[in-house]
Amino acid sequence: MASGMRPLLQFPTTVIRSLFALFRSRQEQAIVELALRQQLAVYAQRQPRPRLSSLDRAFWVALARFWPRWKSALVVVQPETVVRWHREGFRRYWRSISTPGPGRPPISEETKHLIIRMATENPWRARKIQAELSKLGIRVSLATLSRYLPKVEPSPGQQQRWMTFLRNHKDLIAGMDFFVVPTVHFELLYVWFAIDHGRRRILHFHLTENPTASWVIQQLRHAFPDDPTHRFLIFDNDAIFSTEVASSIETFGIRPRRTAFRSPWQNGTAERLVGSIRRELLDHVVVLSEDHLRRLLQEYIEYYNAERVHTSLGDAPAGRSTEARPSDRARVVGLPRVGGLHHRYVWREAA
Image 1 (cartoon, rainbow, N blue to C red):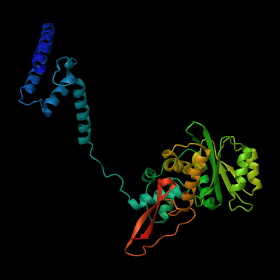
Image 2 (cartoon, rainbow, N blue to C red; image 1 turned 135 degrees about the vertical axis):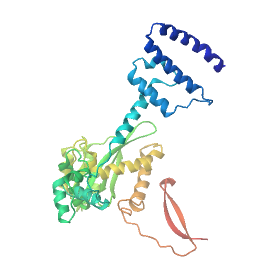
Image 3 (cartoon, rainbow, N blue to C red; image 1 turned 120 degrees about the vertical axis):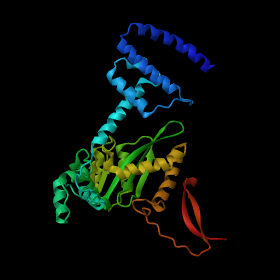
Image 4 (cartoon, rainbow, N blue to C red; image 1 turned 30 degrees about the vertical axis):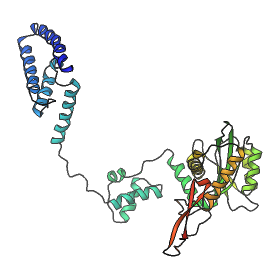
């Protein structure tokens, strides 16, 4: 049906083009005839779909450059296709005449990693790193060296000082934060927690429907004993963490450290904990009530502190001993944790 209708649909087009041809000059008429003959030659190929050779493409690209009305005679392909051929030919032409020069000698992968390492571990830029490399007998130009320097984040001095502070004092730092959990009845429960930065151990948690500054101070008393081992406590600019809360922290012998506005990375350990709790627990359950959430969090935190192996630590926060295989008959057994969402694997003798 479609093949039978095609000649009927093409006939009016042919008539209209013939009428326009009467008003064209002889030169333009010759160009039109040449374009039509070229397309007829393509259609004459005995194939289901006409195949265009490189010569056919070159013909239409050249015609498009020298004849403004080339689109009016084009049938075999879309005009956008001819434009794409022209652009591709332009790229190939300049690629063929652009022979690469010798350039700078390449540097080794070891030197690249060394440049990145020096820029990461020190507040140095290109000239300082170049001078340090020269003391190691490594000669690298400033232009080459700058290509491998890590991109500078906003406020690099502040960020570098903060990261240095965290690395040097992580065993003495704790962080606190809130996260919100909706119940099945769309009520909001606020979960407060304190976490140790050195071993990622959760020191204390509690939840409530109506958090206040006095409630937070009471939780701080439970999290930090009379003689706390931590000397710094990091928290954000939440309105609940008021000046009253900061003053109470100082009475515990701990120095409060408030993060900058919109800088969650400055309390990254707490932020990662919230993400872990959501991915590994809350995304898989529907919280029914405050007691239900408290029980779920208690089970998860016990597993988190005592058994969950942290990638950065290679161990659980509270320390988990390595088990040796007792015998060749022993098999690995999975012990369910947190309602079967997680498991701890141990060796057990086969029955």
